[in-house]
Length: 74
Image 1: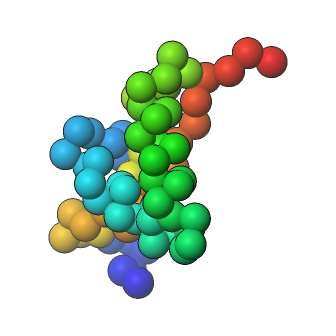
Image 2: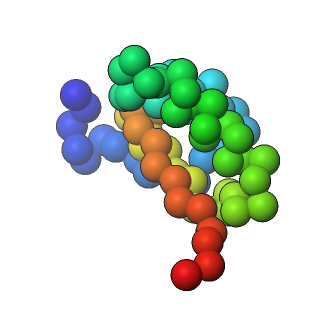
């Protein structure tokens, strides 16, 4: 695991899509493919807000984490 000080968090960009799918697939084990597809489906949803999807990267720019939120009415 990289040193905490060497982790960069930023809004995802189009170039991150493959790395995000890989991180999500690994993180969710046997359900990884389903969750990765859910992330992809959310990108095409009216609830999607690209400003609410973030990646964590090492100093070598390797994506090691992903988090997102979608818009919803309460």
